[in-house]
Image 1 (cartoon, one colour):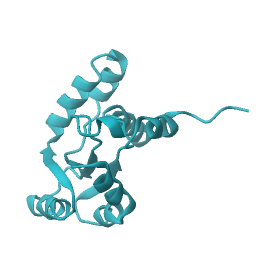
Image 2: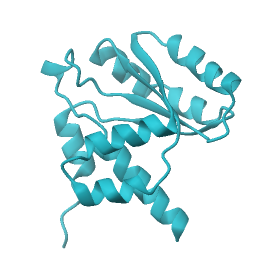
Image 3: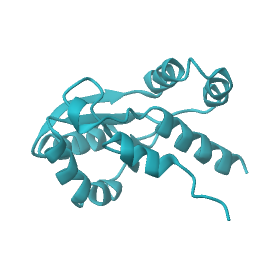
Image 4: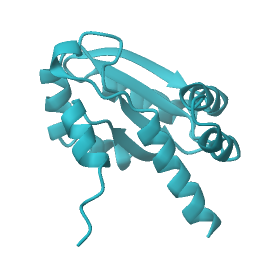
Length: 149
């Protein structure tokens, strides 16, 4: 049960921390991110191998590592308007990660449609790859529950 709760909170946290954008404002700081989540015991060499793979992708703009502590601080900042969710996430250790953005929506879509996520998930030290929705409409479709019958 604890594993399910932890997984559910991570999904909620990842969804909450995503910044949906529209093609018109893609060039603002709200660029969608692709996030590679590492195991707690991922080595520096494993993280470096992932970073090398990311930096080799065409159109990559910014790349940054985020420690577990930085992820928790980021989550708390993003959830400051929802104290109950912030409190729930505060008790869950968030994994270290590598977050990156692309220079434009074309590059982002190319990475999203490629085998990148599946390839990186197979690398040592990686637990998952989270690819944000790229537009507000896409986010709404993804995060809106289907109608009940």
